[in-house]
Length: 128
Image (cartoon, rainbow, N blue to C red; front, side, top):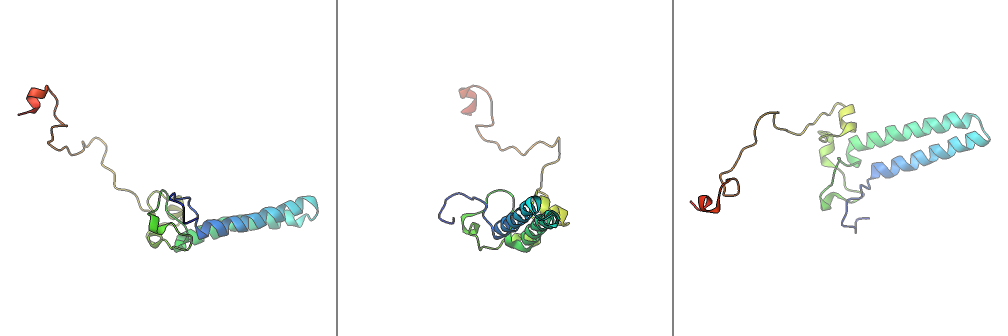
């Protein structure tokens, strides 16, 4: 997985969450066909998978939204920014770790540079 040039999002939190959810789905399926209490047990295990994945994300074993740098794409690389929270991350926001990106206020024009590309007019006017 680390040999790829793309960030596939593989994390320890993701793999553990999928494994626990698979066990929960299997137990639920067995409960449907043979053992009635298995339905509720399987649903509880599946719900636990969500909580386990969330806890591992908050502990640094997940990833922030978006792409990661190449050096941080390995499965066993811990996310050091998780303690403070990730910008625009629902899991971090639910845990009370609100981090928002700095955005300009509405109606405030962006700063402009004085370059020939910003000017309008004929080429003769731009030469001066």
